[in-house]
Image 1 (cartoon, rainbow, N blue to C red):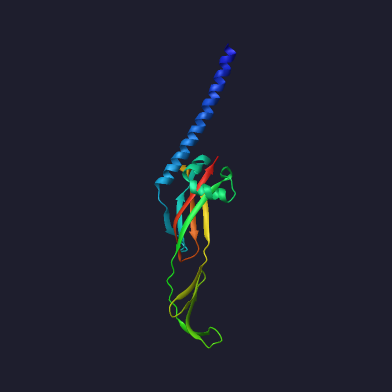
Image 2: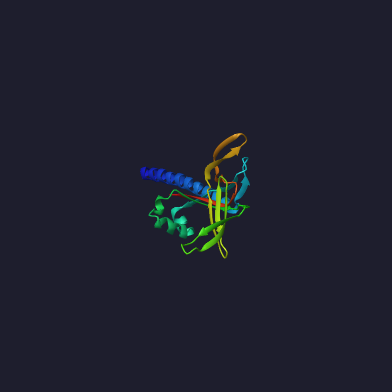
Length: 195
């Protein structure tokens, strides 16, 4: 009888220890999610003048991701990826605003052989990130705008601090930096999917 009580005590102790660790890690995950949902996206300019945004990472389980982000989960399935294999999902929104002032020049275009002549005004402007080309007809405008942008994404952990000791993980954050000076990072989110 004492042998069974001893085995029962060992099994109960193991269950309590591992259950307690699981509950503590789950509580920490939910606290981080609560902080991430309560804080806004922090947009700022870097020292180099580039637009950047910072946000805390949202840590969801596979079932939570499918329930809370159903539209995103459907898109991921359409791409042929199983949700249970998903590591993380990120989304960023940028807005490019360029004020363009160009000179317009006249150009004569012969449409067909019946000596039909049309006067078109052309304009062209470009820098390292944006190019604008267009034609102004009598009754319409045709314009081609191309914008090139590189978004650099950085995901890092913020450690807990006590006095001068750093330990554990307080939060996981993501920073998005746009290299195009005309582009402003408006919104970003990063979801880490946990098993």
